[in-house]
Amino acid sequence: MDFDFNQEQYQLRDSVRSFLEDQWGPKKARASLGKFDQNLWNGLCDLGLQTLLVPEKYGGAGLGLIDMVLVLEEFGYSLVPAAMSDTLLAAEILCLFGTDEQKDDFLPKIVTGNVRIAFAHASSDSTPVVAAGSGSIKLNGKKIAVQCASVASHFLVSACNKDGFEGLYLCDATNVKIRDHHAVDPTALLGEVSFEETPASFLGSKAVHRLLLTSAFAASAQMVGISSKALDIAVAYAKDRKQFDRAIGSFQAIKHKCADMFVALEGARSASYFASWALQDDAINSDLAVSIAKSTCGDACRQICNESMQIHGGVGFTWDFDIHFFMKRGKLLEYQYGDATQHRERVAQAVLD
Image (cartoon, rainbow, N blue to C red):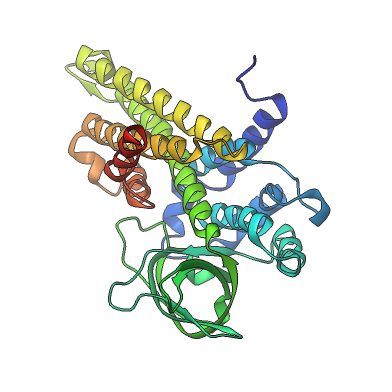
Protein backbone atom coordinates (compact mmCIF):
# COMPACT_ATOMS: atom_id res chain seq x y z
CA MET A 1 0.00 0.00 0.00
CA ASP A 2 1.36 3.42 -1.01
CA PHE A 3 0.84 6.15 1.59
CA ASP A 4 2.69 8.80 -0.40
CA PHE A 5 1.15 11.64 -2.40
CA ASN A 6 0.89 11.16 -6.14
CA GLN A 7 2.78 13.07 -8.80
CA GLU A 8 -0.08 15.47 -9.54
CA GLN A 9 -0.38 16.42 -5.87
CA TYR A 10 3.34 17.16 -5.64
CA GLN A 11 3.14 19.18 -8.87
CA LEU A 12 0.35 21.27 -7.35
CA ARG A 13 2.45 21.87 -4.23
CA ASP A 14 5.51 22.79 -6.30
CA SER A 15 3.58 25.27 -8.44
CA VAL A 16 2.21 26.98 -5.32
CA ARG A 17 5.66 27.05 -3.73
CA SER A 18 7.25 28.49 -6.87
CA PHE A 19 4.62 31.23 -7.13
CA LEU A 20 4.85 32.19 -3.45
CA GLU A 21 8.65 32.24 -3.45
CA ASP A 22 8.51 34.69 -6.34
CA GLN A 23 5.46 36.76 -5.41
CA TRP A 24 5.07 36.64 -1.63
CA GLY A 25 6.95 35.60 1.51
CA PRO A 26 8.12 37.78 4.42
CA LYS A 27 9.48 40.57 2.20
CA LYS A 28 6.13 41.18 0.48
CA ALA A 29 4.23 40.57 3.73
CA ARG A 30 6.26 43.33 5.39
CA ALA A 31 5.38 45.75 2.60
CA SER A 32 1.67 44.89 2.89
CA LEU A 33 1.24 45.07 6.68
CA GLY A 34 -2.29 46.20 7.47
CA LYS A 35 -3.35 45.91 3.82
CA PHE A 36 -4.71 43.15 1.62
CA ASP A 37 -2.62 42.43 -1.46
CA GLN A 38 -4.98 42.07 -4.41
CA ASN A 39 -2.13 40.93 -6.65
CA LEU A 40 -1.53 37.96 -4.35
CA TRP A 41 -5.20 37.02 -4.50
CA ASN A 42 -5.24 37.34 -8.29
CA GLY A 43 -2.13 35.21 -8.61
CA LEU A 44 -3.52 32.44 -6.39
CA CYS A 45 -6.74 32.50 -8.42
CA ASP A 46 -4.73 32.29 -11.65
CA LEU A 47 -3.28 29.05 -10.26
CA GLY A 48 -6.84 27.82 -9.80
CA LEU A 49 -6.53 27.30 -6.06
CA GLN A 50 -9.99 28.71 -5.34
CA THR A 51 -11.47 25.86 -7.42
CA LEU A 52 -9.83 22.96 -5.55
CA LEU A 53 -12.82 21.85 -3.46
CA VAL A 54 -15.53 22.91 -5.93
CA PRO A 55 -17.11 19.99 -7.88
CA GLU A 56 -16.44 19.78 -11.58
CA LYS A 57 -20.12 20.37 -12.43
CA TYR A 58 -19.69 23.93 -11.13
CA GLY A 59 -16.41 24.49 -12.96
CA GLY A 60 -14.12 23.44 -10.13
CA ALA A 61 -11.25 20.98 -9.87
CA GLY A 62 -13.24 18.51 -7.77
CA LEU A 63 -10.32 17.68 -5.48
CA GLY A 64 -10.31 16.92 -1.74
CA LEU A 65 -8.68 17.83 1.54
CA ILE A 66 -5.79 15.43 0.92
CA ASP A 67 -4.86 17.51 -2.13
CA MET A 68 -5.35 20.69 -0.12
CA VAL A 69 -3.08 19.78 2.82
CA LEU A 70 0.10 20.37 0.82
CA VAL A 71 -1.23 23.73 -0.37
CA LEU A 72 -2.06 24.76 3.20
CA GLU A 73 1.47 23.87 4.25
CA GLU A 74 2.82 26.25 1.63
CA PHE A 75 0.43 28.95 2.85
CA GLY A 76 1.95 28.68 6.33
CA TYR A 77 5.48 28.54 4.94
CA SER A 78 4.97 31.87 3.15
CA LEU A 79 2.55 33.63 5.57
CA VAL A 80 -0.36 33.78 3.13
CA PRO A 81 -3.40 35.60 4.61
CA ALA A 82 -6.47 33.49 5.40
CA ALA A 83 -8.73 34.77 2.62
CA MET A 84 -7.95 31.89 0.24
CA SER A 85 -7.95 29.06 2.79
CA ASP A 86 -11.23 30.24 4.37
CA THR A 87 -12.87 30.53 0.95
CA LEU A 88 -11.72 27.00 0.11
CA LEU A 89 -13.22 25.61 3.30
CA ALA A 90 -16.42 27.58 2.70
CA ALA A 91 -16.73 25.94 -0.71
CA GLU A 92 -16.69 22.51 0.92
CA ILE A 93 -19.34 23.60 3.43
CA LEU A 94 -21.58 24.87 0.65
CA CYS A 95 -21.14 21.58 -1.23
CA LEU A 96 -22.08 19.52 1.83
CA PHE A 97 -24.83 21.64 3.41
CA GLY A 98 -25.96 24.26 0.92
CA THR A 99 -29.24 24.15 -0.95
CA ASP A 100 -29.22 23.73 -4.72
CA GLU A 101 -29.96 27.43 -5.03
CA GLN A 102 -27.03 28.37 -2.77
CA LYS A 103 -24.68 26.07 -4.67
CA ASP A 104 -25.77 27.42 -8.05
CA ASP A 105 -25.32 30.98 -6.80
CA PHE A 106 -22.03 30.83 -4.90
CA LEU A 107 -19.90 27.99 -6.24
CA PRO A 108 -19.48 29.45 -9.77
CA LYS A 109 -18.58 32.80 -8.18
CA ILE A 110 -15.92 31.11 -6.07
CA VAL A 111 -14.49 29.53 -9.22
CA THR A 112 -14.19 32.93 -10.92
CA GLY A 113 -12.46 34.42 -7.86
CA ASN A 114 -15.23 36.99 -7.34
CA VAL A 115 -16.14 35.77 -3.86
CA ARG A 116 -14.06 35.83 -0.65
CA ILE A 117 -15.70 34.16 2.35
CA ALA A 118 -14.49 34.57 5.95
CA PHE A 119 -15.49 32.45 8.95
CA ALA A 120 -16.85 34.46 11.90
CA HIS A 121 -16.93 32.18 14.95
CA ALA A 122 -15.21 33.71 18.01
CA SER A 123 -17.94 35.49 19.97
CA SER A 124 -17.92 38.80 21.76
CA ASP A 125 -19.18 37.90 25.25
CA SER A 126 -21.04 41.18 25.62
CA THR A 127 -22.99 40.87 22.37
CA PRO A 128 -23.13 37.27 21.08
CA VAL A 129 -24.60 36.81 17.61
CA VAL A 130 -28.23 35.74 17.61
CA ALA A 131 -30.29 34.64 14.59
CA ALA A 132 -33.97 35.63 14.70
CA GLY A 133 -36.92 35.69 12.37
CA SER A 134 -39.55 33.20 11.28
CA GLY A 135 -39.44 34.07 7.58
CA SER A 136 -36.33 36.03 6.69
CA ILE A 137 -33.43 35.48 9.10
CA LYS A 138 -31.64 38.48 10.66
CA LEU A 139 -28.35 38.39 12.59
CA ASN A 140 -27.54 40.68 15.51
CA GLY A 141 -24.37 40.80 17.63
CA LYS A 142 -20.60 40.82 17.19
CA LYS A 143 -17.82 38.43 16.22
CA ILE A 144 -14.18 39.10 17.00
CA ALA A 145 -10.81 38.01 15.57
CA VAL A 146 -12.20 37.37 12.08
CA GLN A 147 -9.31 36.95 9.65
CA CYS A 148 -9.39 39.11 6.50
CA ALA A 149 -12.75 40.53 7.63
CA SER A 150 -12.24 43.84 5.84
CA VAL A 151 -11.82 42.19 2.41
CA ALA A 152 -14.47 39.47 2.67
CA SER A 153 -17.46 39.62 0.35
CA HIS A 154 -19.43 37.17 2.52
CA PHE A 155 -19.28 35.65 5.99
CA LEU A 156 -20.07 32.23 7.37
CA VAL A 157 -21.35 33.00 10.87
CA SER A 158 -21.99 30.65 13.77
CA ALA A 159 -25.01 31.91 15.69
CA CYS A 160 -27.72 30.69 18.05
CA ASN A 161 -31.42 31.00 17.40
CA LYS A 162 -33.99 32.08 20.00
CA ASP A 163 -34.10 28.53 21.39
CA GLY A 164 -30.34 28.44 21.92
CA PHE A 165 -29.50 26.02 19.10
CA GLU A 166 -26.32 26.86 17.20
CA GLY A 167 -26.24 26.89 13.43
CA LEU A 168 -24.21 28.24 10.54
CA TYR A 169 -25.45 31.21 8.53
CA LEU A 170 -24.30 32.84 5.31
CA CYS A 171 -24.54 36.61 4.92
CA ASP A 172 -23.36 39.40 2.64
CA ALA A 173 -20.52 41.64 3.87
CA THR A 174 -22.24 44.78 2.63
CA ASN A 175 -24.69 44.54 5.55
CA VAL A 176 -22.15 44.52 8.39
CA LYS A 177 -19.81 46.92 10.14
CA ILE A 178 -16.11 46.06 10.47
CA ARG A 179 -13.49 47.43 12.85
CA ASP A 180 -9.87 46.37 12.47
CA HIS A 181 -8.20 44.68 15.45
CA HIS A 182 -4.74 45.33 16.74
CA ALA A 183 -3.34 41.81 16.88
CA VAL A 184 -0.22 39.90 17.85
CA ASP A 185 0.12 38.93 14.19
CA PRO A 186 0.21 42.08 12.03
CA THR A 187 -0.10 40.01 8.85
CA ALA A 188 -3.41 38.34 9.81
CA LEU A 189 -5.74 41.29 9.07
CA LEU A 190 -8.06 40.55 12.00
CA GLY A 191 -11.33 42.42 12.40
CA GLU A 192 -14.40 42.75 14.61
CA VAL A 193 -17.63 42.23 12.68
CA SER A 194 -20.89 43.79 13.92
CA PHE A 195 -24.23 42.46 12.69
CA GLU A 196 -27.28 44.71 12.95
CA GLU A 197 -30.42 43.18 11.46
CA THR A 198 -28.17 41.58 8.83
CA PRO A 199 -30.07 39.34 6.39
CA ALA A 200 -28.72 35.77 6.31
CA SER A 201 -29.52 32.31 5.01
CA PHE A 202 -29.33 29.12 7.09
CA LEU A 203 -26.87 26.32 6.25
CA GLY A 204 -27.69 23.95 9.10
CA SER A 205 -26.59 23.03 12.61
CA LYS A 206 -24.23 20.22 11.55
CA ALA A 207 -22.38 22.67 9.29
CA VAL A 208 -20.86 24.44 12.32
CA HIS A 209 -19.19 21.29 13.57
CA ARG A 210 -17.84 20.42 10.13
CA LEU A 211 -16.44 23.91 9.58
CA LEU A 212 -14.78 23.93 13.01
CA LEU A 213 -13.20 20.57 12.21
CA THR A 214 -11.87 21.63 8.81
CA SER A 215 -10.72 24.99 10.18
CA ALA A 216 -8.78 23.27 12.99
CA PHE A 217 -7.26 20.95 10.40
CA ALA A 218 -6.32 23.90 8.16
CA ALA A 219 -4.69 25.67 11.10
CA SER A 220 -2.71 22.48 11.85
CA ALA A 221 -1.44 22.17 8.28
CA GLN A 222 -0.42 25.83 8.20
CA MET A 223 1.44 25.43 11.49
CA VAL A 224 3.41 22.63 9.86
CA GLY A 225 4.43 25.07 7.13
CA ILE A 226 5.32 27.72 9.70
CA SER A 227 7.40 25.19 11.65
CA SER A 228 9.20 24.11 8.49
CA LYS A 229 10.08 27.70 7.65
CA ALA A 230 11.19 28.45 11.22
CA LEU A 231 13.53 25.44 11.09
CA ASP A 232 14.92 26.53 7.71
CA ILE A 233 15.52 30.04 9.05
CA ALA A 234 17.28 28.65 12.15
CA VAL A 235 19.55 26.35 10.12
CA ALA A 236 20.47 29.13 7.70
CA TYR A 237 21.30 31.48 10.58
CA ALA A 238 23.31 28.80 12.41
CA LYS A 239 25.42 28.29 9.28
CA ASP A 240 26.03 32.01 8.84
CA ARG A 241 26.45 33.28 12.44
CA LYS A 242 29.99 32.88 13.76
CA GLN A 243 31.17 32.67 17.35
CA PHE A 244 34.78 32.01 18.37
CA ASP A 245 35.69 31.93 14.66
CA ARG A 246 33.25 29.07 14.01
CA ALA A 247 29.71 28.86 12.69
CA ILE A 248 27.43 28.32 15.68
CA GLY A 249 25.84 25.43 13.78
CA SER A 250 29.02 23.46 14.42
CA PHE A 251 28.36 23.49 18.18
CA GLN A 252 26.76 20.36 19.56
CA ALA A 253 24.11 22.27 21.53
CA ILE A 254 22.84 23.95 18.36
CA LYS A 255 22.91 20.66 16.42
CA HIS A 256 20.80 19.02 19.11
CA LYS A 257 18.27 21.84 19.00
CA CYS A 258 17.93 21.54 15.23
CA ALA A 259 17.60 17.75 15.45
CA ASP A 260 14.84 18.02 18.06
CA MET A 261 13.06 20.61 15.92
CA PHE A 262 13.19 18.30 12.90
CA VAL A 263 11.76 15.37 14.86
CA ALA A 264 8.90 17.54 16.16
CA LEU A 265 8.22 18.84 12.66
CA GLU A 266 7.95 15.37 11.10
CA GLY A 267 5.61 14.16 13.83
CA ALA A 268 3.35 17.18 13.32
CA ARG A 269 3.41 16.72 9.55
CA SER A 270 2.32 13.08 9.86
CA ALA A 271 -0.55 14.07 12.16
CA SER A 272 -1.82 16.74 9.76
CA TYR A 273 -1.62 14.36 6.79
CA PHE A 274 -3.61 11.72 8.66
CA ALA A 275 -6.25 14.30 9.61
CA SER A 276 -6.66 15.28 5.96
CA TRP A 277 -7.31 11.64 5.04
CA ALA A 278 -9.74 11.09 7.92
CA LEU A 279 -11.75 14.19 7.00
CA GLN A 280 -11.82 13.48 3.28
CA ASP A 281 -12.90 9.86 3.75
CA ASP A 282 -15.34 10.83 6.54
CA ALA A 283 -13.67 8.28 8.78
CA ILE A 284 -15.37 7.42 12.04
CA ASN A 285 -12.38 8.81 13.96
CA SER A 286 -12.08 12.08 12.02
CA ASP A 287 -12.85 14.22 15.10
CA LEU A 288 -10.13 12.38 17.02
CA ALA A 289 -7.66 12.72 14.13
CA VAL A 290 -8.21 16.48 13.95
CA SER A 291 -7.75 16.90 17.70
CA ILE A 292 -4.52 14.88 17.59
CA ALA A 293 -3.29 17.01 14.68
CA LYS A 294 -4.24 20.33 16.29
CA SER A 295 -2.57 19.49 19.60
CA THR A 296 0.53 17.93 18.00
CA CYS A 297 1.02 20.73 15.46
CA GLY A 298 0.37 23.42 18.06
CA ASP A 299 2.98 21.98 20.41
CA ALA A 300 5.49 21.49 17.59
CA CYS A 301 5.00 24.97 16.17
CA ARG A 302 5.49 26.58 19.58
CA GLN A 303 8.60 24.48 20.27
CA ILE A 304 10.21 25.04 16.87
CA CYS A 305 9.53 28.78 16.74
CA ASN A 306 10.83 29.20 20.30
CA GLU A 307 13.98 27.20 19.57
CA SER A 308 14.57 29.10 16.34
CA MET A 309 14.29 32.33 18.30
CA GLN A 310 16.76 30.96 20.87
CA ILE A 311 19.27 30.17 18.11
CA HIS A 312 18.98 33.75 16.89
CA GLY A 313 19.38 35.18 20.36
CA GLY A 314 18.06 38.65 21.14
CA VAL A 315 18.25 39.83 17.52
CA GLY A 316 15.42 37.42 16.61
CA PHE A 317 12.93 39.82 18.17
CA THR A 318 14.13 42.76 16.11
CA TRP A 319 12.39 43.99 12.98
CA ASP A 320 15.38 43.14 10.79
CA PHE A 321 14.81 39.39 11.13
CA ASP A 322 11.84 37.37 9.85
CA ILE A 323 11.49 34.71 12.54
CA HIS A 324 9.18 36.80 14.73
CA PHE A 325 6.56 36.98 11.93
CA PHE A 326 6.32 33.19 11.88
CA MET A 327 6.23 32.96 15.65
CA LYS A 328 3.33 35.45 15.73
CA ARG A 329 1.32 33.68 13.02
CA GLY A 330 1.97 30.36 14.75
CA LYS A 331 0.76 31.74 18.06
CA LEU A 332 -2.45 32.98 16.45
CA LEU A 333 -3.17 29.61 14.81
CA GLU A 334 -2.22 27.70 17.96
CA TYR A 335 -5.16 29.19 19.86
CA GLN A 336 -7.70 29.33 17.06
CA TYR A 337 -10.36 26.59 17.11
CA GLY A 338 -9.05 25.20 20.40
CA ASP A 339 -5.51 25.05 21.74
CA ALA A 340 -3.44 21.94 22.43
CA THR A 341 -4.80 21.52 25.95
CA GLN A 342 -8.44 21.59 24.81
CA HIS A 343 -7.83 19.10 22.01
CA ARG A 344 -5.86 16.75 24.27
CA GLU A 345 -8.82 16.77 26.66
CA ARG A 346 -11.06 15.76 23.76
CA VAL A 347 -8.71 12.92 22.90
CA ALA A 348 -8.61 11.78 26.51
CA GLN A 349 -12.42 11.88 26.73
CA ALA A 350 -12.72 9.88 23.52
CA VAL A 351 -10.38 7.22 24.91
CA LEU A 352 -12.31 7.06 28.19
CA ASP A 353 -15.61 6.76 26.33
